[in-house]
Image (cartoon, rainbow, N blue to C red; front, side, top):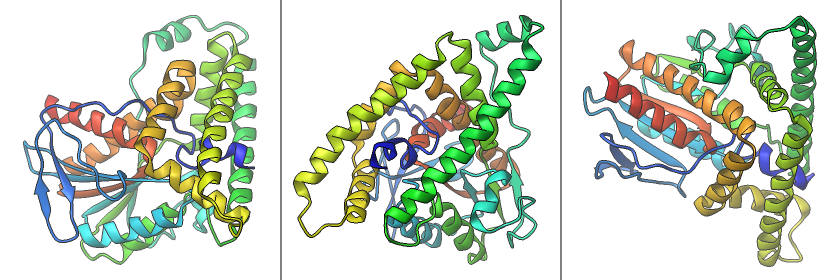
Length: 334
């Protein structure tokens, strides 16, 4: 099961690019008792490189991006403490309504216990190949659409089962994406928080998009093969590093936790993995990361337009740089 761990803990259908220097944004380091102003164009990390806070210099809106691993008790606890510390007006989570049932809520969200909005109407900008594909639709398109629907639904079931198995393997009550439930529950306890934002694209739509881009590449089998090879290469390196530190008393679940926390805490490891994904499997990077980064950043921007002054966003670590870059672009264009 650990061979699947890489993409289903820090990624959860994500990939990422390098951290880029951003211009004209004031970044702040979140401290337990104060906010320290940092130099513009620099990224400032806290809590093992997982939290980045930024301020829109034009209107003072604060956004705190809390990067998580999706099977991590430490992430769940960190999310709760950060929301209690920051007292946000709005909490955005990397969810859509189709994933609410996993956490015991109705898909309609009517029993969330707090007002919420979604990103259902946000569409990432079309790229040139999208425009060409639309213009070149053939008589086979309906059949292709049915195939993509079947693949995406099957993929959703497969990923959910893998997460459930990983949670059981860890030997404790661990829900994949449990940090999002922690965020929702924490938000409901904060009087300042007015609503939750389910800021992600529908999960099946993301899987369908990935399958579409893989087919469009002309080599869908090769796309899967390259993805699997990166997973195998990088997991073998991580397992070796972790096993060198593990003791004979450590159980399999202990080692799994150590692997997850290593993935979460090491910027070097994440950068190496994500650079390979972007270079070798751009179809994956585009559908699972780039487009969703835009959607979640836009959902945050809209909350600012509605009057929110202090926003916390709980997202997989892989999404933090892209969301920050998109917010920077939005704010510069104001």
